[in-house]
Image (cartoon, rainbow, N blue to C red; front, side, top):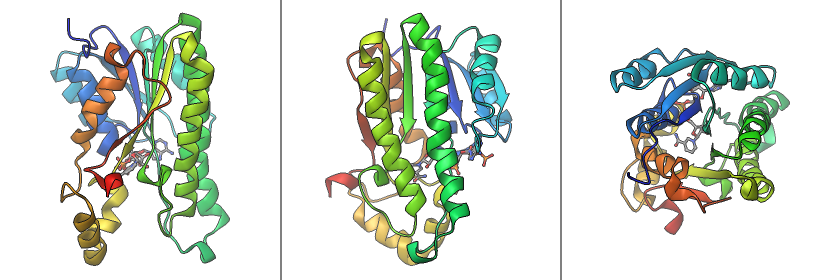
Length: 250
Ligand code: NAP
C-alpha cells in the first residue's frame, strides 16, 4: 500500500467551501479519506465532489469567529464519521489598512478567527487524538509567518502566532502519536487575495518576485496536505512546509 494512502481515515477541514480549503479537502478525499467540511457557508459543492469520488462527506456548520462552536464541531465530526484522524485548520480572514490607522475591530476579528479559534480547535481535536494515541493536525500558515507583510498587522500577528503554536503543540504531542505541522502557502489565487490580484501594480510585482512566475492555485496545496496527513510523514513534527512557487528562496 502507498505510504500516502489515506483510505479509512477521517479528515476535517475548516473553510472548505472555497479556495485553499476546498483544494485540500478534495486532495484528501482523492487520497482516500472521508472528509468533514466545517464552516459558516455550507460546502455543498465540495461535498458533491467528494461523494462523486466515492468518499463520505459531512457538512458541519460553524462560525469560527468565536470559539463557541469548537467543542461541538469535533463532537459532530466524530458522531457523523466515527472518529477524527486529521484536522486541517484552514479557515481564515484578512483585513487591510495602514498600521497607523488600524482599528481594534480589525485586530480582534482576525486574531479571533485566525489564531484563537485555531488554538482551541487544535485543543479540542487534540484531546480526542491524544486519547486514541494518534492524529494529524495541519495548520495553514502564510508567508507572513516568516515575513512582515504590509498593511496587514493583525494577519501577520495571527499567522506568526500559528507558526509558534504549531511548534509548541508538536513539542507537547509528538511523543504521544499526534503530529502537528503547518503549510505556508505562497501567493494563491483565491477570494483572500482578490484585492491584490485586482491591483495591477501589486499583481505584476508579486508575479515578478515569484520564481515560478505566477500565482499558485488552491489544488497546488493538496500534495503537501496529503503528505503531512499520511504515514509518509510519521516522523515529521513542528514543520512549516512552504508551498510558494519559490517565494521564500528569493
Ligand atoms: P478564502 O477563499 O477567502 O477562504 C477562506 C475560508 O475561510 C472560507 O471558506 C471562509 O468561509 C472561511 N472562513 C472565514 N471566516 C470564517 C469563520 N468565521 N467561520 C468559518 N469559516 C470562516 O481564502 P483562502 O485564500 O482560501 O484562505 C484559506 C487559508 O489560507 C486562510 O487561513 C488564509 O489566511 C490562508 N492563506 C491564503 C493565502 C493566499 O494567497 N490565498 C496565502 C497564505 C495563507 P466563507 O466563504 O463563509 O467566508
